[in-house]
Image (cartoon, rainbow, N blue to C red; front, side, top):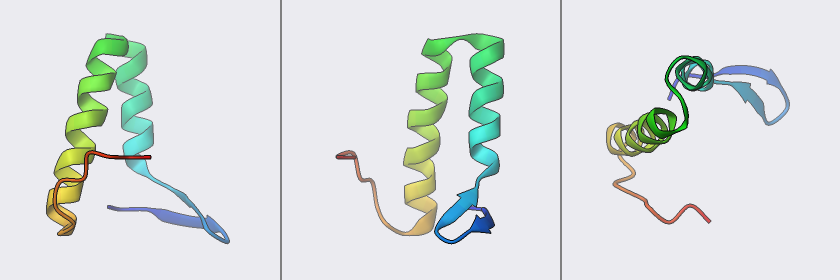
Length: 55
């Protein structure tokens, strides 16, 4: 939910850095779970509800 604008329609999100760090430290299964649960929780806090169809 927190982002830093860089260019037009481009932002940097600290969540991406955390996900990359977890990838290096713990591997792909943990990264999948952290990304999936993190996205789910972000949707809930943002008020959009759970949205599981990301295509």
